[in-house]
Length: 528
Image (cartoon, rainbow, N blue to C red; front, side, top):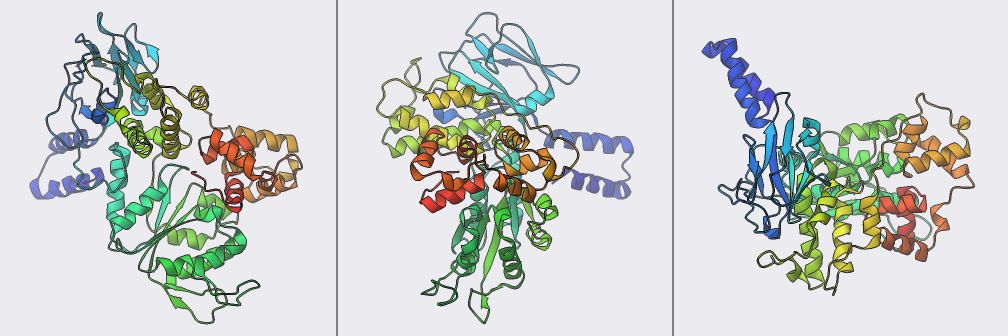
């Protein structure tokens, strides 16, 4: 039950039960304390990797050591302390301060403790914002914990294929299940790499259409000239070169779900056709004279600001309203750090199994050193992950391959540079909206580089529309186009950037969409 519904029920109860204001405040306060997030510790790394993801919710703060408190898997009762013999029995202290902040104090003696990468030598204060972000605690180079805010415990019958138990993911699953069994169109919003396709597949899996097809299409990788044909199909002779009829994605999705990723990159004329198909359940294949009925559940996703796209005249307002009948928001990885350990070992286990080296994750005997260093996992937890879950998956793959057949763990140089690089701050906009003609080529290139070649951020930074930005980029003789790069150059960049499309776009100084289209032309499947 949400807080506002609870308040409504309390308000209704005032008349029926004659509750006074004091009683209402007490009951409401108790309810709020039960549903609001509170301090918790989650295991990000443990020599026994089966314990990664276990959590303890701290109703009151106290001591943390090898023997207390007890951690358990989500939804399970009981639990075990950290127990690892490489940890000290001498506890460090976690305290709540009178001003609403928190304090962590080192043990007197015992093993080394690091907090957010720095040695803990004296007591340090932590404010609520820092706890919301997550504080990384490394114990004796053996165990890594995240001190963070967590919601109440929940039991999951089915995680819907979405790995994680952070309160943001719990909210997402709840929202997903509210709409999955309905016929409404759904718009999934989230940053690139955050897992929007996974959410779309979860909707299909939880719907009555689960036995039907689930067709996923990335609109950014379809050339605009062929988008209508690929989506709706065409008849023989519909256009020059159409020697045979073609069945489009809509027809192949009938009876199931069609997921259109990067919906904001759909050409305007195709958007009108999409709107009609969603509203009427009918499509016109190119060249056809009569409509064809299709029974399709429509799910779309974007990492762009579609409202701004409407203002810029590149996205139809009616289609946005039709898509927005229900919106799901996928959180970025930096807002769900407690899931990083579970996700990392989920991907690493899969990669090691693929190359036949799953034994590397067996718990060591006694206090032997572990294959994966705790310090690396602590570093992963502190990183801001601009490429989100996709980037973390690529890191796990890179580590598995780089250590294939190696007796000692090694971190590839490219990964070390990535994790050591500072977070990229949000660019400060220039202010008032500019005329594109007043922007010099030097200003344009500087803005693109500062905004990491992301068109939406660059346009906002310069105070112009995205269409005006594209016009400026097309007129520039100093900005390389995607077609200027050959197969070998893009393949080499993909290897260096571990397949992360955002990093590749930044390195090649291209828009992500332009890179995706070029990769599609060259037959390269991007992991982005």
